[in-house]
Image (cartoon, rainbow, N blue to C red; front, top):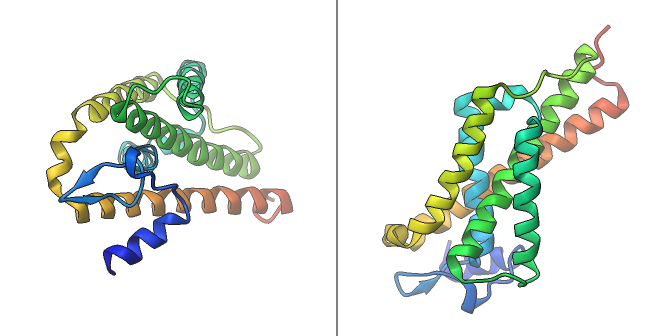
Length: 191
């Protein structure tokens, strides 16, 4: 696939502002800083949820909800350009958006599935999972701060990572939608 075809593909999901995109190997990435963060955040969080097994715990508890609400306020302020100190900020906000979206899509699908099959919720996150969630949020800030050091990995690397993040987000959204539809139609209700 050529660079132009990739740019065309991503133009349907991102505004591709040249002033707000990272340049790698003399070429702009096919997504702006916020979208890059969104897809990387989704990919990283999807991997963490899978490897750690936290996805089995459904939706997070109050501590994570409070953190997510605070981050969502920052995301909105950044999206409206009320606060916009630069590329690191925009990348961090995208990372948070991808992170929160994956947790809620996967956790919500898990809770719907569990409630439908067992007529009860999955039980929620343990203290360890909540601590991991807070640590991962801090790691996303660290990633945003040191990200420029990783740009030399190359245009193909970051474009591939963006595409993998997009696919993981799409797969999670599709899974959540299928679980919701099946739950609504009673297709996997236990007997």
